[in-house]
Length: 161
Length: 223
Image (cartoon, rainbow over all chains, first blue to last red):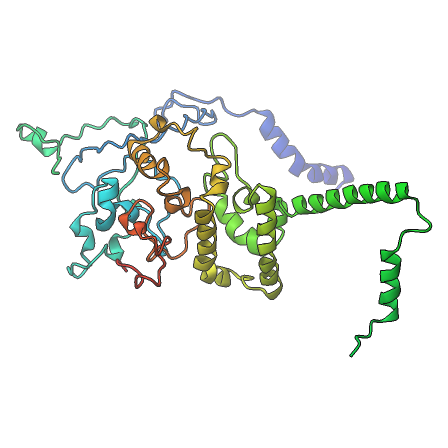
């Protein structure tokens, strides 16, 4: 093998990528039938974070089993082994002073069906089910209709107070 | 029996009690004044140096536990970027109260030397006691450190939620309760709260146990 052959071989690993890149990236086909008409390298600015709903007005449930949503600010509410801050208003003892709705008796039932004297450990972590709301609008419109609307009778909006 | 005073002490007292022979009156008064200024300035500078957050979290006990926990709360991070540092809440701003608190803090030096809370477990185990000290202190001084920033006069309750407005009107403006009665654990994790009724409950009316001491009522209900 001649020396200039060797030199060409040695240069090969550098040349090939250079030649490939010299061809240029194939133009982006935004009209591809397999892709949405979006350029994926484009970065859209993030939408602003919507504010919390803290107007303290109860929201009607969409169906009776729905956990009611939280209409107040819950920042820094501590729900730990030491303390459950929700229960400082919503437990039976303290509802009078603050006029908060009491946790329902279903929360006192443990998994064996025994009704305990206070909130059962399995229902202790309030925000597993009850969540605060923001003013964000759903990205996909929701066409849910509750039962009362479906059967065409005047609705009580699920309010069973 | 005559008490024998060492010779060195006696000569020192004689020098101290007699008029000066070598220094002029002007030197002594002016020098005393300047020395006083230097001492006082140095004292206050040292005092202020111990009154900074960097000093507080210089010890890992404070850095790893209360400071880390505080970082998530609204007194550290919020929309306006105003934040409270450790001494804002834990050291009185007035001089005499501050000195009194600093003297109390000598016990904390003791705790540091002997490692009272030098592990996370020890800190968590003592959390209730430490919290009760602070609750008692703020209760006794009518939440003075809260009121350094939050004044009841400047509080516009129409901007508050209806519930908060009503409770502030009923308890805060009447002076019936003070900030710490309701606002516990606003900048730190709470300890085991059994037997500590919330400030708005009738249970905390009992003056015998302003903190609803947990031993006093058999650890409360709801366990």
